[in-house]
Length: 168
Image 1 (spheres, one colour):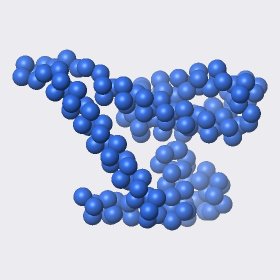
Image 2: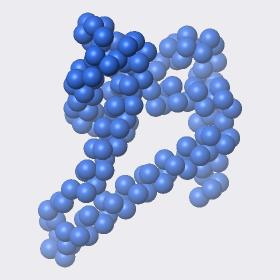
Image 3: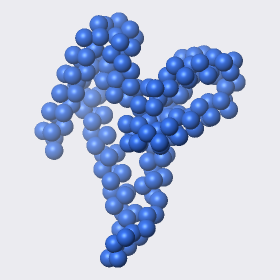
Protein backbone atom coordinates (compact mmCIF):
# COMPACT_ATOMS: atom_id res chain seq x y z
CA UNK A 1 0.00 0.00 0.00
CA UNK A 2 1.14 3.52 -0.73
CA UNK A 3 2.37 5.23 2.43
CA UNK A 4 0.34 8.37 1.61
CA UNK A 5 -2.88 6.36 1.48
CA UNK A 6 -2.07 4.72 4.83
CA UNK A 7 -1.28 8.09 6.42
CA UNK A 8 -4.41 9.68 4.96
CA UNK A 9 -6.70 6.83 6.03
CA UNK A 10 -5.26 6.79 9.54
CA UNK A 11 -5.55 10.59 9.85
CA UNK A 12 -9.23 10.39 8.83
CA UNK A 13 -10.08 7.97 11.64
CA UNK A 14 -7.63 9.21 14.26
CA UNK A 15 -10.26 11.02 16.36
CA UNK A 16 -12.45 7.91 16.48
CA UNK A 17 -9.42 5.81 17.47
CA UNK A 18 -8.59 8.34 20.19
CA UNK A 19 -12.18 8.19 21.48
CA UNK A 20 -12.04 4.40 21.65
CA UNK A 21 -8.68 4.38 23.42
CA UNK A 22 -9.70 7.12 25.84
CA UNK A 23 -12.91 5.26 26.77
CA UNK A 24 -10.98 2.06 27.39
CA UNK A 25 -7.97 3.54 29.18
CA UNK A 26 -9.57 6.47 30.94
CA UNK A 27 -7.04 9.17 30.10
CA UNK A 28 -5.81 11.22 27.17
CA UNK A 29 -2.08 10.54 27.53
CA UNK A 30 -2.35 6.75 27.44
CA UNK A 31 -4.85 7.01 24.59
CA UNK A 32 -2.45 9.17 22.58
CA UNK A 33 0.41 6.73 23.18
CA UNK A 34 -1.76 3.79 22.17
CA UNK A 35 -2.96 5.40 18.94
CA UNK A 36 0.61 6.36 18.05
CA UNK A 37 1.78 2.81 18.76
CA UNK A 38 -1.02 1.46 16.56
CA UNK A 39 0.10 3.68 13.69
CA UNK A 40 3.70 2.47 14.07
CA UNK A 41 2.53 -1.13 13.94
CA UNK A 42 0.42 -0.45 10.84
CA UNK A 43 3.35 1.33 9.23
CA UNK A 44 5.47 -1.78 9.68
CA UNK A 45 2.72 -3.84 7.98
CA UNK A 46 1.85 -1.31 5.26
CA UNK A 47 2.96 -3.67 2.46
CA UNK A 48 0.34 -6.22 3.58
CA UNK A 49 -2.59 -3.78 3.71
CA UNK A 50 -4.56 -3.72 0.47
CA UNK A 51 -7.27 -1.13 0.92
CA UNK A 52 -8.42 1.86 2.91
CA UNK A 53 -11.15 -0.28 4.50
CA UNK A 54 -8.55 -2.80 5.63
CA UNK A 55 -6.51 0.03 7.18
CA UNK A 56 -9.58 1.22 9.10
CA UNK A 57 -10.57 -2.23 10.34
CA UNK A 58 -7.03 -3.17 11.29
CA UNK A 59 -6.57 0.18 13.05
CA UNK A 60 -9.58 -0.34 15.33
CA UNK A 61 -8.60 -3.92 16.15
CA UNK A 62 -5.00 -2.88 16.83
CA UNK A 63 -6.02 0.02 19.12
CA UNK A 64 -8.46 -2.20 21.00
CA UNK A 65 -5.86 -4.93 21.49
CA UNK A 66 -3.22 -2.44 22.61
CA UNK A 67 -5.68 -0.99 25.14
CA UNK A 68 -6.44 -4.44 26.55
CA UNK A 69 -2.70 -5.14 26.79
CA UNK A 70 -2.19 -1.80 28.55
CA UNK A 71 -4.99 -2.50 31.03
CA UNK A 72 -3.63 -5.97 31.77
CA UNK A 73 -0.07 -4.68 32.14
CA UNK A 74 -1.16 -1.89 34.48
CA UNK A 75 -3.24 -4.24 36.60
CA UNK A 76 -0.16 -6.42 37.18
CA UNK A 77 2.24 -3.57 37.98
CA UNK A 78 3.44 -3.43 41.53
CA UNK A 79 2.68 -0.21 43.33
CA UNK A 80 4.53 1.11 46.33
CA UNK A 81 2.14 1.38 49.22
CA UNK A 82 2.09 4.42 51.46
CA UNK A 83 0.04 2.48 53.95
CA UNK A 84 2.35 0.65 56.37
CA UNK A 85 -0.24 -2.06 56.97
CA UNK A 86 -0.76 -2.74 53.29
CA UNK A 87 1.46 -5.29 51.62
CA UNK A 88 2.52 -5.37 47.99
CA UNK A 89 0.35 -8.45 47.45
CA UNK A 90 -2.72 -6.50 48.64
CA UNK A 91 -2.20 -3.94 45.86
CA UNK A 92 -1.83 -6.62 43.20
CA UNK A 93 -4.92 -8.45 44.40
CA UNK A 94 -7.03 -5.27 44.45
CA UNK A 95 -5.82 -4.27 40.96
CA UNK A 96 -6.66 -7.73 39.65
CA UNK A 97 -10.03 -7.53 41.37
CA UNK A 98 -10.81 -4.17 39.71
CA UNK A 99 -9.75 -5.50 36.31
CA UNK A 100 -11.81 -8.66 36.76
CA UNK A 101 -14.80 -6.57 37.82
CA UNK A 102 -14.49 -4.34 34.75
CA UNK A 103 -14.19 -7.33 32.45
CA UNK A 104 -17.22 -8.97 34.10
CA UNK A 105 -19.33 -5.82 33.65
CA UNK A 106 -18.14 -5.49 30.04
CA UNK A 107 -19.11 -9.13 29.41
CA UNK A 108 -22.55 -8.66 30.94
CA UNK A 109 -23.23 -5.52 28.91
CA UNK A 110 -22.03 -7.23 25.73
CA UNK A 111 -24.33 -10.18 26.47
CA UNK A 112 -27.29 -7.85 27.06
CA UNK A 113 -26.57 -6.04 23.80
CA UNK A 114 -26.39 -9.30 21.86
CA UNK A 115 -29.54 -10.75 23.43
CA UNK A 116 -31.89 -7.79 23.73
CA UNK A 117 -31.00 -5.11 21.18
CA UNK A 118 -32.24 -5.15 17.62
CA UNK A 119 -29.64 -5.41 14.88
CA UNK A 120 -29.97 -1.70 14.12
CA UNK A 121 -29.71 -0.69 17.78
CA UNK A 122 -26.65 -2.90 18.23
CA UNK A 123 -24.98 -1.46 15.11
CA UNK A 124 -25.71 2.12 16.10
CA UNK A 125 -24.53 1.72 19.70
CA UNK A 126 -21.32 -0.01 18.59
CA UNK A 127 -20.59 2.70 16.03
CA UNK A 128 -21.30 5.47 18.53
CA UNK A 129 -19.87 4.11 21.77
CA UNK A 130 -17.06 1.84 20.62
CA UNK A 131 -15.92 3.49 17.41
CA UNK A 132 -16.70 7.08 18.45
CA UNK A 133 -18.54 7.96 15.25
CA UNK A 134 -20.74 11.03 15.06
CA UNK A 135 -24.45 10.73 14.41
CA UNK A 136 -23.87 12.12 10.92
CA UNK A 137 -21.28 9.41 10.17
CA UNK A 138 -23.60 6.73 11.53
CA UNK A 139 -26.51 8.00 9.47
CA UNK A 140 -24.40 8.03 6.31
CA UNK A 141 -23.07 4.53 6.96
CA UNK A 142 -26.46 2.99 7.78
CA UNK A 143 -28.62 5.09 5.47
CA UNK A 144 -30.75 6.58 8.24
CA UNK A 145 -31.36 10.13 9.43
CA UNK A 146 -29.11 11.54 12.19
CA UNK A 147 -32.18 12.01 14.39
CA UNK A 148 -33.04 8.33 13.89
CA UNK A 149 -29.50 7.34 14.85
CA UNK A 150 -29.80 9.46 18.03
CA UNK A 151 -33.13 7.83 18.86
CA UNK A 152 -31.70 4.31 18.40
CA UNK A 153 -28.69 5.13 20.61
CA UNK A 154 -30.90 6.62 23.30
CA UNK A 155 -33.31 3.68 23.32
CA UNK A 156 -30.47 1.14 23.25
CA UNK A 157 -28.70 2.82 26.18
CA UNK A 158 -31.94 2.94 28.15
CA UNK A 159 -32.74 -0.72 27.48
CA UNK A 160 -29.23 -1.91 28.37
CA UNK A 161 -29.25 0.20 31.54
CA UNK A 162 -32.66 -1.14 32.65
CA UNK A 163 -31.77 -4.77 32.01
CA UNK A 164 -28.37 -4.42 33.69
CA UNK A 165 -29.86 -2.77 36.77
CA UNK A 166 -32.50 -5.49 37.07
CA UNK A 167 -29.81 -8.19 36.91
CA UNK A 168 -27.84 -6.74 39.82
